[in-house]
Image (cartoon, rainbow, N blue to C red; front, side, top):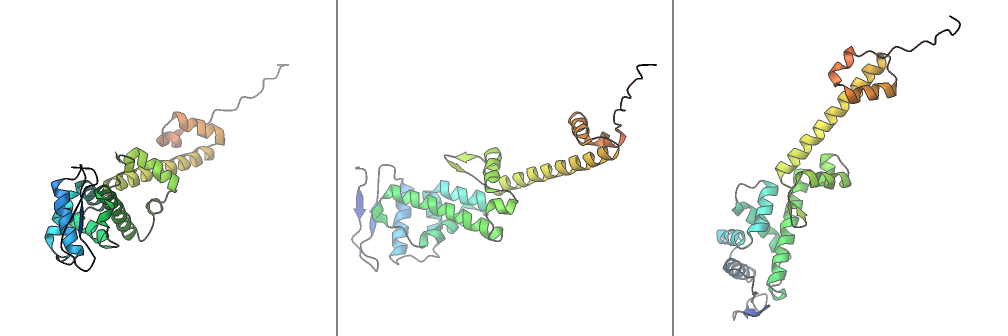
Length: 221
């Protein structure tokens, strides 16, 4: 099979000549899915046909998996249905080739995930929903999110772990500030209180005593 070879169907409907694009990496599942999508685009198949979602899930398991993990859909058919909604508009031109079709599907999966998160967070961007800067958000992703190639896989579990981490940091900051106030109230200078906390637990602050100041000795005594 030659790279970029195309099979052209003979039927013509509202949108011109149906084209099925193949390449050496095409799988039987991709071919079956393309045939169903062509049938849909040329109005031979209803968008409510359950075979469409099943075909998309079988042909493009990785993008469908991204959607399922990021949105918490109950099954792969539901995730494939979300992807299918994106494929409807504006619709992919099969004449661009099989590799371009895969890129198009991957891009539509990313858009489906982004739109779901916007809706879940009231239209906020992910870092805004977490209350951090965009730069901090991507640093946190490098700590908590697995990578798939150059892309972070941001699931609900990843976001929950980031929120838990941020909450823990906030609590630690509150404890530190409270302990600093207690120590300074007991006579510590700011620098002495900060150094004391580097060596002791917050809970010990209530019993801490500053070092007594040395009084100069009378050299004539």
